[in-house]
Amino acid sequence: MINDKDFKINVTSEIGRLRALLIHSPDSGLGKVVPSKAQDWLFEDIIHLDTMRKGEYDYYVKLLMYFLDEQKINGRLAEIDSPENSRSFYKPDNENFHASNKVIEFQSLLTDILADDETRLKLVASVCAIESCNYRLQEQLTNTNPVELAKIFISGSVNDDKMIFAPIPNLIFSRDIGIIINDHVLINKPAKKARTRETLLARYIFFNHPLFAAFRDKIIEIPEMEQYFLRPGEDNDERTTLEGGDVMVVSADHVIIGCSERTSASGANEAIKLLFANKVVKKVTIVKIPHKRDYMHIDTIFTQVKRNVWVLLGSLAIAKAAVNEIEPISWFVDKRLKDRPEIIQFFSDQEPPRHFKSLEELLDDISKHDLKSTEPTKFIYSGNNTFPFDAREQWTDSCNLLALKEGVVLGYDRNDKTLEAFKANGFKSIKVSKLLQQLENKKITIDDLQNILILMPSSELSRARGGFHCMSMPLLRDEI
Image (cartoon, rainbow, N blue to C red; front, side, top):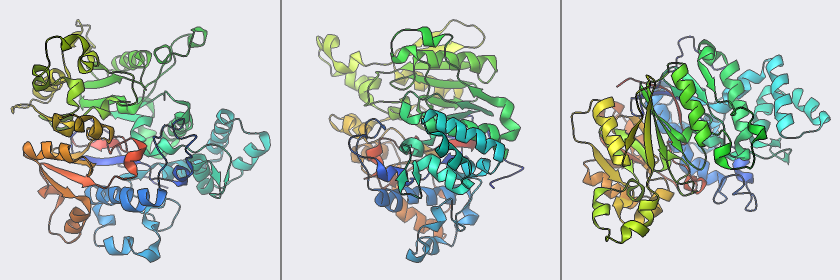
């Protein structure tokens, strides 16, 4: 069992040095997504599982291990990737699994809690209820050993062969199931039915795993609005939904929440009330973006790189340069202006709400006032703010970056024009394969890395429409 008496959670920014996070490596369920169900399961395309694992996601795990748990990987790179080991380092059900308590695998935590008879009984009943299983199947699952049961709950398959319910392929996007805000856990409410089971599993983990026992009283659950079942229609704004890609902890006192395709106004409203009532933060900024698959969550249109540097989609942000190029009559018809986000900031002490005209204005205010940056705020734009590359590269997650520490971020290697924009703003780049070899050979240390974009392979991962910000749930970061 993953356990650590000194384990703690605390996230007060998007850029403090990462010390622990929750992930889920691609499982066999991803390899069973079929074209006819892809969009129902929130995928744009079907993926090749082996390529996603071996050629892409495994690099992510290795890099995280070097950053967060170096003693478990240093000096073992050739051994880990040798053919005879069959990827055992990455498999939670294998005796050679890394079992890190810093790069924490969701499946491992699920296996741990299923070892408790009472928890297993309750969780099997809950899963079978939402999946409409028959009684005999429920009995069979109750008597299944925890390792296999965890795999079944995630992949939907028995013995990786017979499917008994749908997979949950979006579990690789672990940020969406919950967010750590300071030392509290905000458990999310998914907008799409395809994500219901993963949220249920996450709820059981946070409330039942020993790692989180000390924080049980600090778990916040979003309720449905009162008497929601009497309200007409299926409109997203009438349901209470909130997903982690729409929540950013930009400072200890300040959280941004997006109202998007996946997070409703009702969900944002309930989150604000609970965060203020529990004295978690002092202000919450709402960023309302168009309800479009192009954008999905706010972390698909902007993320933070340094306390004074942000990467974002210029056509939504309405950068000054872009606005100046618009002909006068275009102010009435230009799509970029119609899609401009609405931004309003609320305060726990009942101060009047504050409005912002643009994303740049908001992010500049955060850099200067929340993070006390003394340097000018810089904006790095998707596709170098040039059409059509801005839209193309935003689609492949040019704005969805994960900061391992301030100024050191992970992004996809396919977004060439965005890379040009990074270099124009004083950043270097390095391919992850080269960086891993340098770390292994002691030619460079983590502390040596400054102002750098680490380029990750992306042909299959990008088909799932999520970057490394999506594929991470930070549990602990250093304060900045």
